[in-house]
Image (cartoon, rainbow, N blue to C red; front, side, top):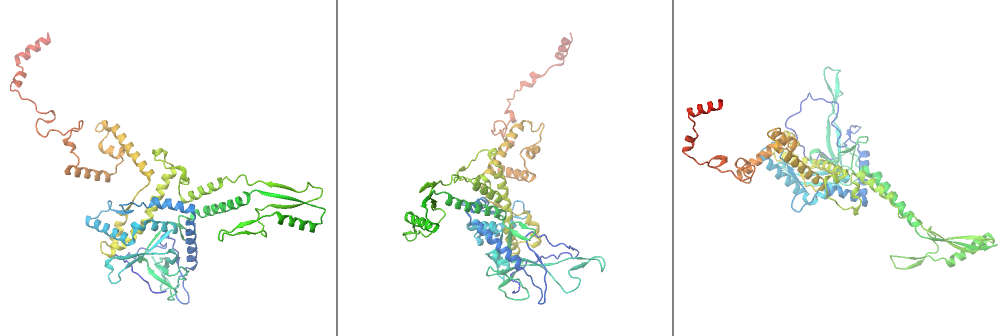
Length: 554
């Protein structure tokens, strides 16, 4: 195998030497940890694992050609990837990212650039479908080796049958390797280190993975040069990445067998056949058989139509199970007789076919209601929504989040190569970068609409008690279910819209009528007319006060 091809992104900060662990990284990508050595040096023998994975991918692709499985796959892909005339299927969401506006702008620009070189807006359906069927996705990140700071120049799809991810344990010289001494000479624990790379072969065969021997038609590619995105399903017993179609293998095979047996049964039982009882009298056995054949050839008619040539041929020498029966009858019987055998009576029953179709859809996570084409599409209240549709919407959401790992890896490489961020900065930013897919699930949208309507109805009922029994903050958090971040964002947006004049200022508006309050004058009650004699008339003398008091006492 040739030397390592591609590039690697190294961290600027070295890890502490005190970090020691006998347990390797979690095997979430279905990669085995290979340890091997021999007379010619170290090697990695992955032939068995590669062969099994190769056959597994072939089986998945054959399953996708079945009409029922193809329909279920299309349901999933159409829900996950929504194509719109004007909007892109996915955009980067940076509202939770704590960074400057300049950094956010560059991240958005680089993400659009990556989508353009992938042609993702046009090929998003095919890319997601390939990932869903195969259970894995590989892209080679092509850069200018002399000018890596220019970033990724091209993204090239790699067939999963041509590449394999390998994690090989490092073997150094020394008896104590890969052990690390802890407290004393005798106190040591294993601390393995691994080399991670990919083995690529031009032809989809089974490479041996020999490192000591160059060539073999394989190329060793650095880990950072490949974008590797899996389904997240791993067979822990065999350390293999599985597709979402793996659960449906048995159900699909059962459906195929039932359909094939149904065809054979209908072909054999559907036609009506006749039984000819031929009277052979007292003839010996040999002559009786000869006489029966003569009668059968005389009255038997088997003309066939050749659809390719348009000819009508006589194939009397061939006997099929759908033809008539000819039976001899001895003297003393009822003589020559012809009876008719009825065809199958239960040919219209498809209960078993429907059962296995539902079983296939359940295995793939598709609601059973989508099987019936005549079932219509009802957008009523959320109470009419089936639980399966809500489960399906959550399943599609998980698929999107898993598929977005591809964008994360590409964006990481692009930003680091162009010196927009450092590897350490990316580790802090990664969890706050989200990807917003176009949504087209009417059931989830209907549920959200009814939730908002219910909250606004509760708000109208509780509004007279705000300021008496409930605070505004309590109502926003408990009734409207707004988070602290949403409250902060909404307040900023309202203030900004008031300053721009989009909405009126609540302090300058009558809360009852909605009319603007007067800006100048006597306040809420308007201008009050002034009368000079008003104060004089309203004054009461001491004598009058004492007189009124005495009268009241009497």
